[in-house]
Image (tube, rainbow, N blue to C red; front, side):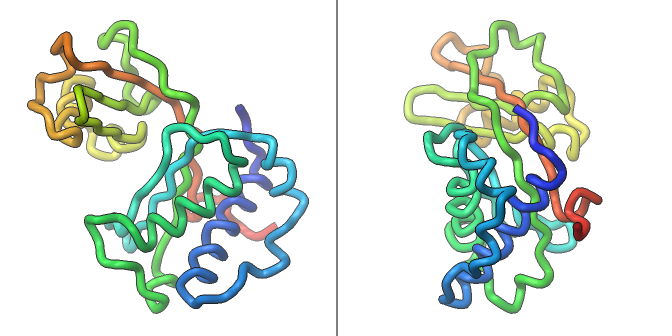
Length: 191
């Protein structure tokens, strides 16, 4: 799956406009129904929307997989990141100008055949054991300068498991890749 810079900009604009419309109790503006988004309607993929203020996390919600069109997933996850991340209070309209939006469009998760094959910066991880589940996006390990073992340990921790649980026979580890783009990059510059 590839996304053009125009499509990436359109998705970032869609996410911001959706959050603004939701927080201000308005309808989404008609300009948002642009041709770039129509071509994205054929893509069905999981996605995460991450919100930061001055590089500090302010919200991050997503789906690993979806059967909905990508623009719909981005809208739902943008609202969820702004209003439903249990780690943070609901985003206020006054904070909207301060946030930077990052979108991660995910490939479907697959079982990791060998933990030694996990590549930092390339793979995101999902760890599952029983009802416990934790996910970390590919960029998290890079941002924190983790090696493979640290990445696995932190993903296990996110699942509420002990750090070594990835090597437990009751645990399933999945990997995925992501197309990651944000307003902080040149891709978000005006057309």
